[in-house]
Image: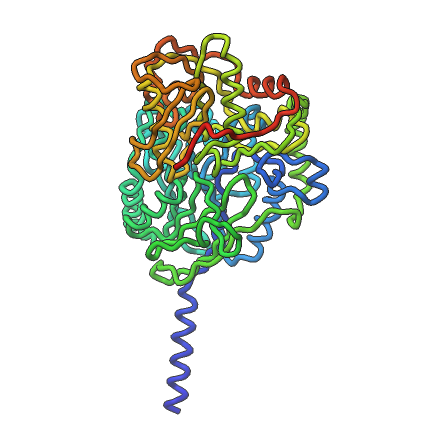
Length: 518
């Protein structure tokens, strides 16, 4: 009987322990960039014929189906977003944040963080989005008290209840958003570690012991936040489009990446994957297990018919613009961010060449385009205006200005200063060549700068073309702000590239060694 009593007591303890565990499935997206329609394997537009043939990925209609299925198999679940819903296709150009708000509400998101692209059109458009969505929009590391359009509308953190448990959610935005986007002078961004820890402490004081950070800051920053804070259980990331996976070849890391007891996940971008992290917490809020895998949104995921119909309805005003064939390409024009933010790339050459050709008659000698301004590749064959706008969605205009050779070199040093992070400031150029030694410290990586075949003269004045975002200091190009004879109101960059493609006949993509990587 004593033995039986021990067995019964043990079973009772096990039952109590099992009841204390809490299972939570965290469904997540990031860097969606207005890809409401399916995309190709190159992250650009995908035709209806290719979609019917099963060759496309993503699209909101697939996400609707996948999220519903994931919720059905989960004991408890939340759906969150790691930022950058805005910008990337004609849908954003035309509808701004309204379309994102409509479909995020339909999908039933529980929260999102502010990405840098949410500030592309300033606080006003972001505020309209925040007022329309039916969930909290979060940002812990920014002082918005001086910005009347945002003050009181965006919160640092929130608490939601799931399955009888309280979950704390904290938002995190790139600290350099003032450089990356257009938040205006009244939003002050701060260090992520201190901001997150302050919110963790506040949530803990409220009795919350399960805390998830929604971070649009990149995997490197997420790893630092995990290492330098206490109390963070999960970080749902974004910003650098990291694919984390245990099964996909070429993934940036495992899913999840563990830093101490903190699980970090991210699901690439553009709605190509739905992240699904299954976490088991003990009664004290500690992670017992964290397992999962991003789910590929391929043809095996049926598109929700109502969503397909609504997206088609919203696309109707855009069709004439988007489907207009503007040129032919004799080959695949590589514009992948992993290439164009690290080295000379065919898309960078195309865009820089087009910029320089447009203003060469004005005596302009050099073109500089930030790699982060290139958002997709273009397939061989017909090139539509929609494809060009997917590559260049920001409505940037050509900017011309004059600077010394010394400032040109300073700009190039800025451009290659964050290669390790895949930063968008990497300079794609025309009219010049240079060498990069990434093994050297930032600020001393550039050498052998040549303009029109001659060594650059630091004291001489050069005429330069870029886009208005870069000319006004975006992506760290602050040295251009005070440039002489600056004119920021040239033609739209997408139109410039489309017209250049048309003028040169079937375009042959190429690289020619204008950027040498040591």
